[in-house]
Length: 220
Image (cartoon, rainbow, N blue to C red; front, side):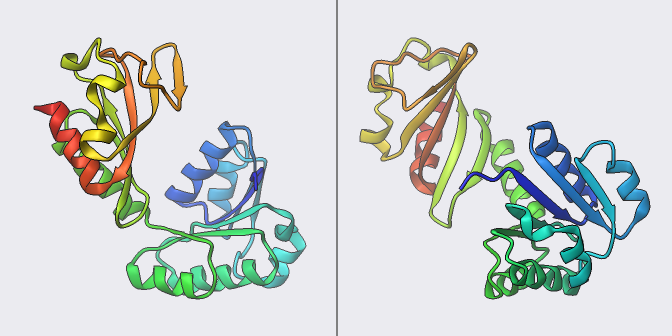
């Protein structure tokens, strides 16, 4: 299901950053926050911005939040408000509900009440930055699950002129290069004969260990 309309409850640092990016990508975004100052700051950025209590059922109903494809709960440290907003969005029939969690326990509660996706911005950013610091060719790192990772790896000089067949990531390590981001554009589902250059970025998917071993091999 393609998501085109997003309602964000909570316009703190995370919520406002998320809303700004979605708006820039061309999506319709409704921002909801009880703080009028935050709402005023985002009113020129988002499609709509409303000063209201996102934990009040009648408020959400009157705004028409049920008509949005995705409801995002970006409330900060008020765990009670976060959970209440999640319950209301589910009860109102929002198609997909995403919520920010501030702890593992908070996340487990959100999952129990049926939130479709729980995100941990601070934890996930820490993990990504740590990997980037210790791996010079790693440009980005996303943990898909406890066992699987997708990573963006810069192509080192020693691999310039090599084909995907030459590096044989799948045969040697079990991970796959699923895309190559070249200066002239992205190659999706590259073939064995595609040639790498130093300016390229490989998008690699595999188990954590497979990707780690592949990283180590190209950095040696």
